[in-house]
Amino acid sequence: MDIKSAINKSMSKPAHWDKNIKTLNELLSTVCNNVFHLEEVGNPEGNYIVYVETGKKYESYDNINAYGTYLVDVHVYTRVEYDPLIEALEKLFNDNSIPFELPEIKYGRSEGQMTVVYYLFKCEI
Image (tube, rainbow, N blue to C red; front, side):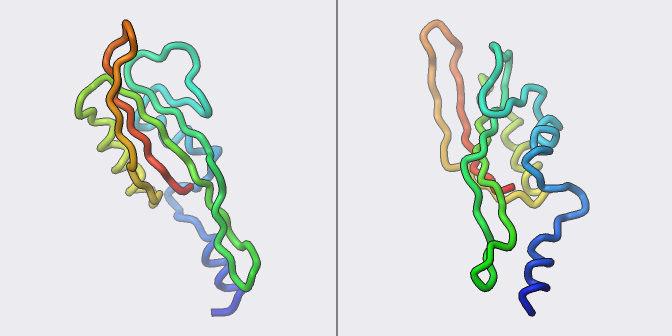
């Protein structure tokens, strides 16, 4: 495969979703009503998602950056043990060919607050 073909192949996107950081909010909103970019606004009730770009990774061919994917942290906060939102997110990522890992799950209680379970998904968009 020549360099031009490799670049064109790497830049092709699935027809069902334009993997674009600007459309991530719309995609996440299909599984959760409270989705925020960078930080939550106000005091969201129930579970909510905050996503943040943390960098960009490039595919290179012949020392040329041909195609980049954003590295995104998707933070999920819930007060529900075994929240079905987590499985819904995993399915959403798989159905849309979004590579992810779930390296962090924390449980905590803030003073005077209800218990919160925190999940961190690391994705590539």
